[in-house]
Length: 454
Image (cartoon, rainbow, N blue to C red; front, side, top):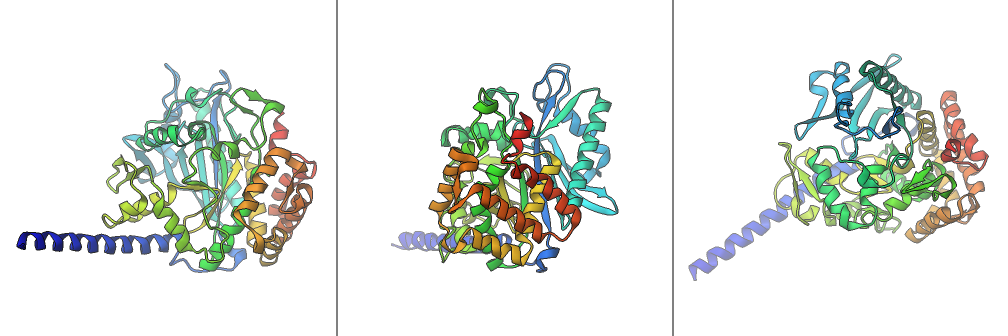
């Protein structure tokens, strides 16, 4: 009898400990999602971030440059090694024993702008710049990155270029490209091989432009997140920059290929977050959704990456207190069209030429960082009536009909004109308006970026 009582007490104690640990991790994760501890600032003074992924292509062969290179030819690893002189020793990012990038800053005029150089699964080269309140400074950081790429590759004696497209135009299928030597991507590749039809296309052959938007408090976070989600199909169509996919080229390439890929990657962690437009949706709702997702893998503070073997984020959060980097990892293992991470990522745009990527950033700034433009954009899209079904319908109509689609009850041509006008009105800086105009002039011709590549 005594033995039985002892076992019961131990089980109760363990259960209480797990619940207490879960509660602590939940609060810490909620704080990160809300951006707690950050001083609120007026919309016009808020920061932006820009991430631009591109393919490294060898002009001489027309082939994608891999991490290791081929034969005696150098690879992206050699490019990163040659970049070391621009960064302090502590700014190198080494993962699983291999150099994977840098995190430092670059001078733009008299401003230091943060820059992170990293690699996507098949050695797509990403430059993440910011935060900055100036779109021109973000573009300046990208242009400085590109200039160094050109200088370093010239010194290496290779003729490489950075190709901005939503899907790699040089390959017929994802397995044509090897993964970089990173345990995270090995585990993700194995998972996505069975979670949907195009997980490997997403990892190996896709590249994006992502804009990060700040918010002041939880109410503003939800307002930003909902509008970003509703704008997802619009942004995807207007920034369609894919000319080839799995053998289809030119006019045979479907519209919005990246969105078609993402739609069949993993329904558990992609698309629209369940309940986004429900009246009672909150940051806590988003966090509860996160808890139910299986994160595939976990990287500890010691740098060890291992499979989570089907466990949910809640399972991991209930086991031990997680470090800030581990909580950040849990937020990064979901891929909805808009993602909360203490700021809001707008994710559906294809990889774009740097000036067009800056134009998209100006478009986002003009809509989200001006009170009047934000309100009018919400009214235009009838956000008080928005549902997941309406967003799904917008995706389907734009993929099928393009400029002839009717989106949220408005012809796409009219909706684009209204949003472009609102964005322009919301920008006070003339140089930012010029960057926006470089993109909206394309739209005014019933064109999208991929039409410039044909």
